[in-house]
Amino acid sequence: MNDELIELSSPEPGVAWLRLNRPAVLNALNLALRQRIAAAFEQLDRDTAVRVIVLAGSERAFCAGADLTEYVDADPLEIIGRDMDRLWGAIGACRKPVIAAVRGHALGGGCELAMHADLIVAGASARFGQPEVLIGLMPGGGATQRLTRAVGKFAAMKLLLTGDPIDAAEGLRIGLVSEVVDDAQVERRALALAQRLAAMPVLAVRFIKEAVLQSMNGTLDQGLQFERKSFQLLFATEDKREGIKARLEKRAARFSMDPVARTDVADAGHTIVPP
Image (cartoon, rainbow, N blue to C red; front, top):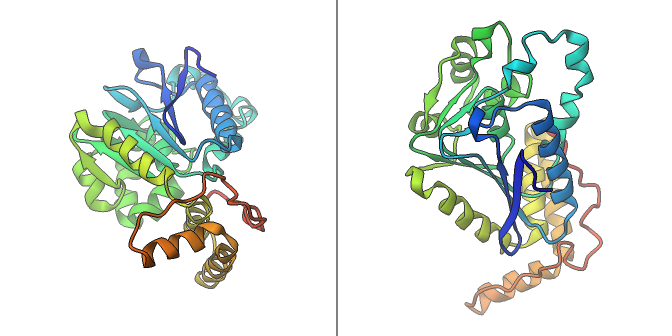
């Protein structure tokens, strides 16, 4: 799937590396790039050899947002016809852990793209923001919902209503990013986290992601019921038995490389619904 817009590689077993490749325009999201990203996520979600996905940009920018050259003369019918909900949904519905490795700008759609990840590793140079209001628009890729859930109403309102960006340290303070490292260490750290997650029991990781996303979509009671069901289903897996035996025997666990762990519970009522 490598082309002039994205680069897809596998630097380590179980890890897929998806890099945006429009550095001349700071990886701005035109429709073609959005379609490539969605297709790549659909492909990687189906690929049983892939356990973790790292999403990266370039040194100067993770993604500077929408390509405004496609917006200036666009009308509502044209925007509706782009099926943006389907393109964003392909990322949000991914069942596998996604790590965003962010250096430089992550603004507008770029910030929303990072927020579709499950972990965000930010470099010291990273800047996050939703500047859509400054051009007479509002976020359209989920920021009013995801950002509010991540940082709370008042921090989200400040970012959304002023359009002012924040640096990585402030992003960490308010809960928008997972951790901050030196720019030179961002991708190395993201890969180390990906390797660690790739070695984890697949179904446990998948069910944890699903349960957390479920907490963002429903009531507390619904979330607790979903968690209990997932917890119970994991008792059918060999990874549960191996993990407990390894702990009792004081040795490293050797989890199965089979994504379904030779059980029939992998898709037993578990379908991620993006928040």
